[in-house]
Image 1 (cartoon, rainbow, N blue to C red):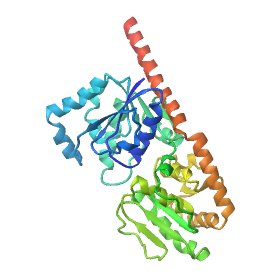
Image 2 (image 1 turned 180 degrees about the vertical axis):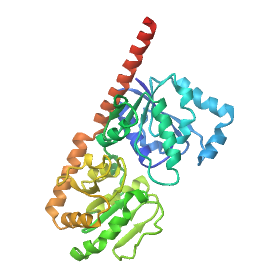
Image 3 (image 1 turned 120 degrees about the vertical axis):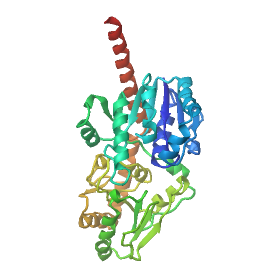
Image 4 (image 1 turned 90 degrees about the vertical axis):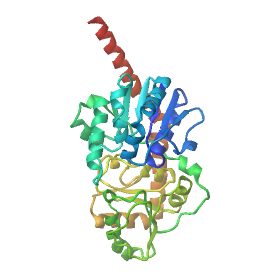
Length: 368
């Protein structure tokens, strides 16, 4: 099967996801990728055909760069030359929305990683883009039953397919050094956004310190820290984008990985934690708890509850056997349930289903 993946970011979680899925799909299929100039091409297998797209940094620049007919023609002609059986879009990006009406001769699958756009200045723009992708896609992939239920309130559920987020064990191969776990190291990792609930972890610090004075709260990721109370001497901040080859160091040193989100659909942080055999503490929002076995691979606590968050952190940090067992369980879960080979098989089944339905539709049209 000839598969075209399209991604419009250069680094971060979407590139990680797209690269690992594309690599798994390329074992038995002809995989092509269109991505912006400067994307992390080294993450993709050599067998994948890569095409680099020149875009601007903003929606306005993108529109201006493509307003020239030759560039529009070049993009569409590249797709025409590839002539894929399926186009798989790895985000409902506003830029891509402009081109979907021109691609209706192809079967289109869109993975909607966040069924509800996060709060912020771009929420309205993201909602419009999501709705356009829903309209023009033949199938939609989400990560979790909760995500499918939410999206199913807007469109027929038969169009939506639940495929879990795959593992991120490749980070363990990219690590530059081997580090020992640091006792009391609590890791909050990823871009800092309000919806990730960092303020509740900070509010939990005094209660954690009462039980375990020598803790280390590591906050690693880009984003604004304005408005956060970071006066504790036990807080260490790395406020910048963490390159892929440095990710491993943070997770190797961590004793527990904490995700105190107040909303969200899914996250790639849990698969990274599992890859490094680290227990996780998550909140009961979206489909995030669906990949955490409460009491086995980590703990699930209510959102916006610093007391419950602190109690879960203390319980893990004060029980070495529990912490190590949870880490092993998480790693086993990742290998058995979240392998990219399994994710690729499930994805191919989605492709085959829409190809079959399209073939049946053509036969019906011919008969009538």
